[in-house]
Amino acid sequence: MPSAPMQSLTANSQPGEGLVVGGLDIHVLAQALGVPVFQTPWHMPQYELGEQCAWRLLRGGMGLDRGYYSGSCVYAGSTALLRQNAQGGWDTWMSLSPFEIESQELACRHAHGHTVVMGLGMGWVTANIALNPSVERVTVVERDPEVIALFQRMQVLEGLQADVAAKIHIVQADALQWRPAPQQPVDFLYADIWLQLAEPQALAEVRQMQANVQATQLYFWGQEWVLAASLQALWGSPSWSPALADALTATRLPLLTAVDGGFAPWVERIWRERLARTPASSIR
Image 1 (cartoon, rainbow, N blue to C red):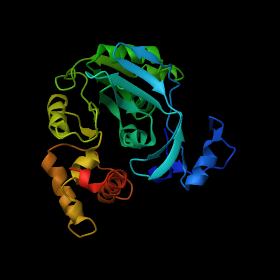
Image 2: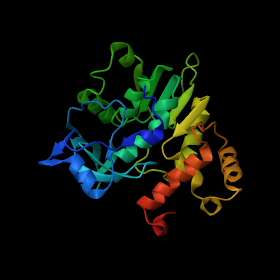
Image 3: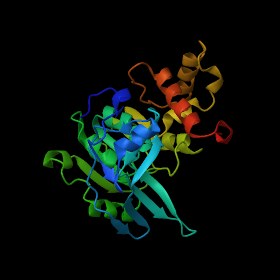
């Protein structure tokens, strides 16, 4: 279980130490761009690439990205899960890019007891939650049997110790309808069932999940974006923290807010990264 502070997960390293793609050392590219190479202590499964009906798993080359909270960086070898859409194109449902890794770290860090994960995806979160020694059981709720079949083909659990892999139990069900067995109350809920971060219906759907699950604590993908959306004008003012506290109360959810340095600075930091990633005029 990684213990390094979150602000240290993206770090500089020296040329010649690592990955070469297409004859170019990633560290040389990073120095040329004046940004760090993305590094993370989290477990990274060695995915077996392939397809399962409408789903495809592939691996990319070198790229430039912004982390969810850490700024610009270069990375390489990111694996992505794509689904063919009705128009014949491909939508990226998940990728192990710096942005997506950092946006799910709190779930991996704070999961405990019986943890429920809504949405299987590539299984990255599931594997890292299971590696958390505070977690006793991981129930993954996934409605698409093709995703479950692809997960099994990808051999995500290969390399995990037997006792860690044994914590994971996959249930084929709808995240908006599933309820735990009475003898297995839920300590922690992590929800990520959306194609895009902070989709308009996300908060309502999380409320629906929690009404069924009754978890002691929960975290959902992109909750910082959702909470900060209407509070930008208050940044840097004495009203910011109280307004965020009011927004948390208004959700009527036991949201995870335990972050080193305080939750209000954390949310503001993440939203500023969003503004740096996306022109403010396009943010609604």
